[in-house]
Length: 449
Image: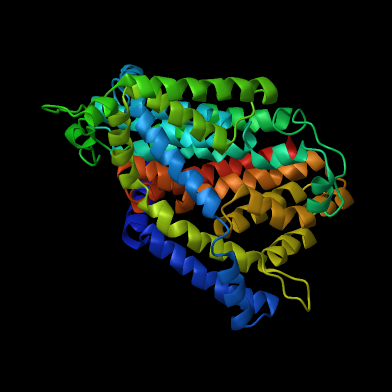
């Protein structure tokens, strides 16, 4: 019965889910129309919100491109390829491959979401090369499924914002939170660790149970996953060729990168963000490839999967602009109306649940932790205080909702899909099952733990 339901979800998604770019365009039109209906604004207002927000994710878009490119290039270094290949040897059967990649992905994403996105997809590629008859679609979906825990982990932007003192915290929460909230009450709280632990233990088993029968599994030809040969073959090299193929420059610039990383962690501790993750991936790749020529080739190969990010992220920025665009007469925004609607039907017991659900809905249109916080914190944090719900529980309810619907939001899957060479419709049917399951676990945990 379960496999029939999974197969039905996969079939429906493959038939009806459009290309991620068309999906983003359709979402633009949906928000445009609903924004006018819900907030009472006119077409001109919505177009202005859309256009004014269109380029607000440029810096983030470049960060995401670099997550894909530097991570993929690093994994193409000989020593990393050998490490991932050896790690893939632990799986001998399709079931073991699904269990392994899900487990590794959840742990990696809990540590750092950018790191987890890349490592999960790269590990899945190595498993696909070695394990016969493993369904490649489910393998990549399992690698992506770990992303559901990222906002509950140590790189979660919302709990980290709550832990940061200053006037910005009070302003963002409409003066509901004026003192920092320790991560011991959010990320490392018993309720958050229990939810994360249950997902870590059970979701690999769930993904394993989704694996199609051998005659229905769609495997990939291992030869299609082989990377291009990056070893240069030059006859009669010129001085320029010799420089490009010399390890000296790579070593020198690599030493500078290592020095900065040492200074950074000495000053900030284990504070990972997208910039430092990309920095580490970049310079580790330069060093491990040995020569500039090899690394240039690896980056050129990696950029082939970045087109989706480059094309789609501005349209999601436009959606965000329309979601947060305020009607000057009423002071309402589309995202604000959604949040306020859930607040109005909440009790102290159900408030974490409805905060979680509202965050999941808003995240579908505003797929950014910072954007989610800016939209919901001024509404949900004061409401939680008024109902007697702890600040930490309210904040983590927003955080979990922000991460939850990423399971069916192609926005965040683009780096993994670029590495895997698949489309969103190939994995989203499986991700629907993960969405339903984790939604139940998270909702129950937030209400009763």
